[in-house]
Length: 130
Image (cartoon, rainbow, N blue to C red):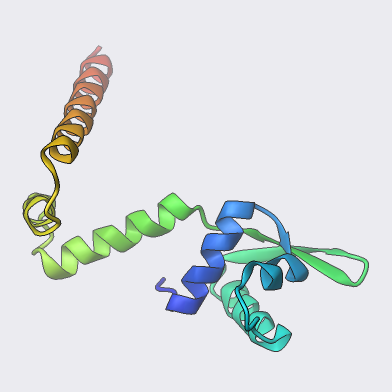
């Protein structure tokens, strides 16, 4: 499920904090702060989309994420690869490395990550064959 820019911004704060009250959310915004009703509407949309839930403490609600940040963005990236790169992670990686103007150091770091992932998968394949 896709989130709007405002919903994503609010989810970023909730993911970072883990559990938040309305006052914490409003305090996190720069001036001019959004109206309480605006934040309530966003939280209601996030509840309807099953991204957040809450626990009641007296007259206050403590909100917490139901979806992990990594799961949301992983699905988002997979959708982008499917829709824009013919479902080819290789085409996406090629585009990413060329279009983002990575430095040599960043490319070396990326290469290390890829090499580590190859080793991890080879180890898993070897273990699963036993």
